[in-house]
Amino acid sequence: MAVDIKKFIQFLKEVKIELKRVTWPSRKETLAGTAVVLVIVFITAFFLGIVDLGLSKLIKIILSG
Image (cartoon, rainbow, N blue to C red; front, side):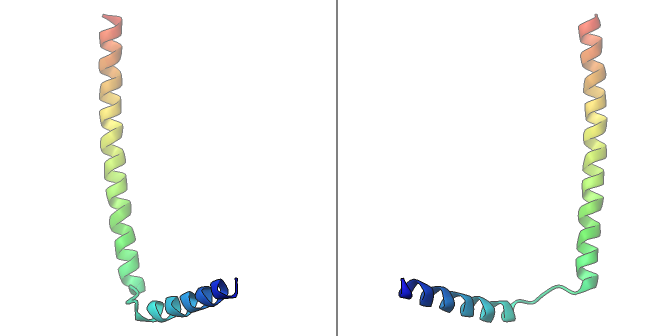
């Protein structure tokens, strides 16, 4: 069991070293990326809403006719 604890501690040390090597995005880059994602989500939602509306009307026409 002591070996497992030593391995875990070694793992945490390696994680800390790796996190120091990471190039973190700036606040500006993070906000820009978030804005792009939100715009794409809204465009996709709008498109799927239009398709859903069209298919709903088509189904109503088929079922009532």
